[in-house]
Image 1: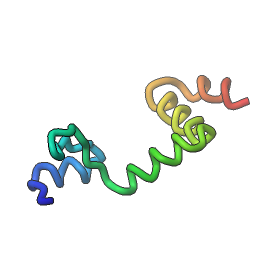
Image 2: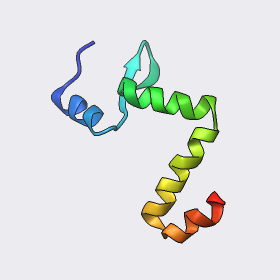
Image 3: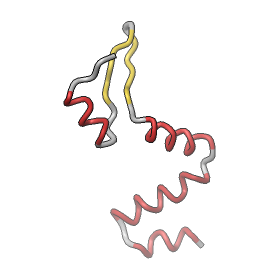
Length: 69
């Protein structure tokens, strides 16, 4: 499978690239992204820190500390 320069750039920025495989809608992602997502799905405890990081990014540090205790 060949990807365009634009698709490769999207992958490098962590974005999914839509592709059609025998009339099935699929997406390409980097293996690193896949591995991270798989870990989150297999063990939800890993999702906790990701949620806190996202919350801190858009919220306040005190918000995450409240739930971390």
